[in-house]
Image (cartoon, rainbow, N blue to C red; front, side):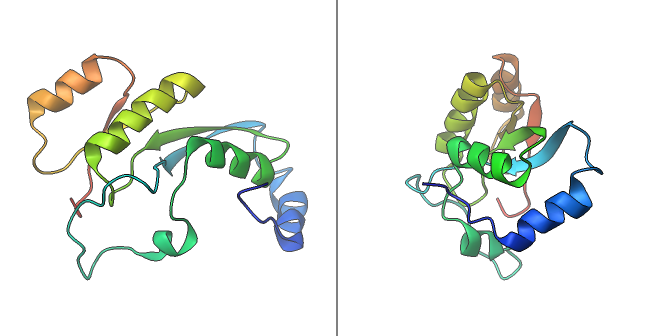
Length: 138
């Protein structure tokens, strides 16, 4: 079963507007990957973007791969992945590290205000992360 429900209009836009416009290979440089069973994290504020939770309760790398294959059937898309803001940082960073290695995807280490410089440096130096991805909401 597919994760994404591609509609006729989606196919129309791809075929008539995107197919000949997009390069064969490209990078999606802002992709959150996370699992719904990870602990909730962070403070919900009135400024927090909540539309994402209306679209997906999780976005595993397997779901991401399925979504990209359906949306861009004749392209090769490399996602730059990192964890989401609303889930436990350690759990999402561990997941991103694991699937980044498994799928050979570039990754960013998610941080919050409590993450020390030493911790960021250690995580990046162990290999697997290209850099960090901070968010104001955490």
